Image 1: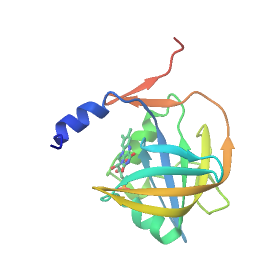
Image 2: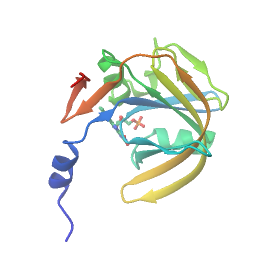
Image 3: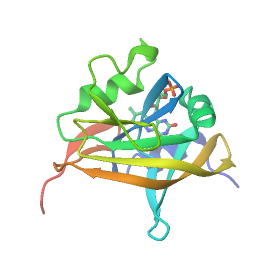
Image 4: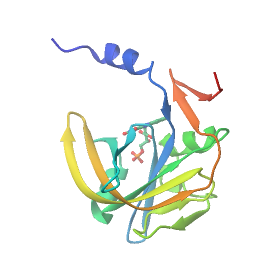
Length: 160
Ligand SMILES: Cc1cc2nc3c(=O)[nH]c(=O)nc-3n(C[C@H](O)[C@H](O)[C@H](O)COP(=O)(O)O)c2cc1C
């Protein structure tokens, strides 16, 4: 017997995840959204996976452009995370955000602590999400402490 949506949400609210902004480019169009459901998948070849809601508008841009980048946010960048998650002014999320263009064409956010630029190599339909697998063509490591999301709130890491 399957669990309910509320049970699913309660279970995963106990999981902490690093906050990233997934960015994508198709021609002149750039778009991006906040994500926590991503993971390193393979070292050789270097693969990353990200899970995207079928309703996300970013999907179409990834499909057309064939690339994406995951930009890991730093502590204190909650506003940037909220901006890329909000549907208000959705198509102007990049206003005031400095980016470089990665080798795939995906925008790499300069104030992120890490940017992973990926070429799409597979997409798998899974329930109400798509899983995109990207081969990492470039990694920019700028340093800093990650922004963490857990239990519906942003958190900072502390050493135990
Ligand atoms: C902290 C946080 C993490 C999120 N993680 C994901 C995620 O991993 N996958 C996803 O599909 N949506 C995630 N979202 C929701 C999307 O960012 C949000 O629905 C966004 O508006 C989608 O943008 P789009 O429709 O323009 O693509 C997250 C939101 C927040 C605030």
